[in-house]
Image (cartoon, rainbow, N blue to C red; front, top):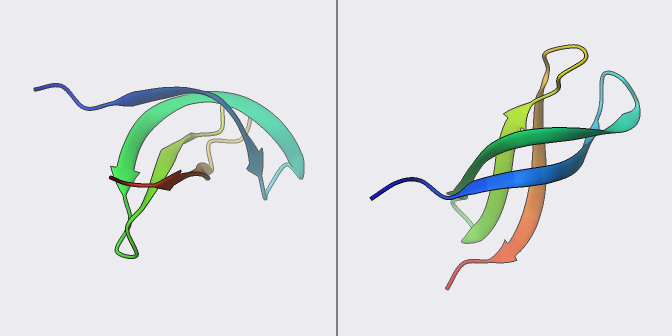
Length: 54
């Protein structure tokens, strides 16, 4: 079974701008789905909360 992927945008705290990125979807400890990836400009980890996991 392959991991779910996400392609979209997220806010990069270091660049202070929205950046398009590709990443994987993970479930946080609180049960929320979140996409994690790397900012293509500065290399910082970016996260985007997607919603509750079912």
